Length: 168
Image (cartoon, rainbow, N blue to C red):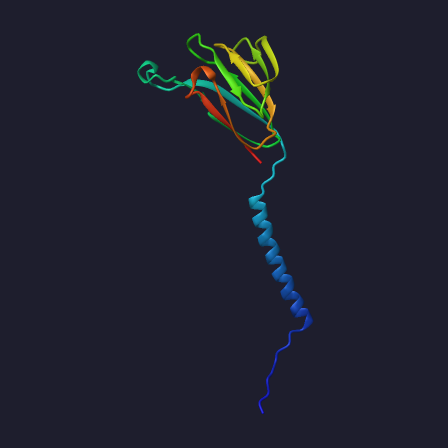
């Protein structure tokens, strides 16, 4: 007859192994969730937007050479967004700033290159403004919807477009 020996673990050793496995599994899951779900409290984000020009002849290409700089604004859902848009055009040419629903914005247009100049116009809940040469607009809204949303100048499509990227 042969005799089998079974080694029994004590309750304290078994409890220790279970605890170590649980800690390692919890750390792995916590690190994964922390990496995948990044939360930042809503904050105020300020951007400076300018019109700029591409170096080509509009008459030859039959396209506008005007662009937005920057052409992408990235924020988190819930952030308050402030855009200082300055029309620094070197010729007497106006530009529009437009956005589609679900976004609308408030805007204050100043009669000069900074917000220290007198107010020329003020808008609440609009989706488009016109900015004349050497004017500055202060555009404000809350980024309430996640996604990618286009902003543009109707006078200079298709080149004068940009994108609001709302993460969340």
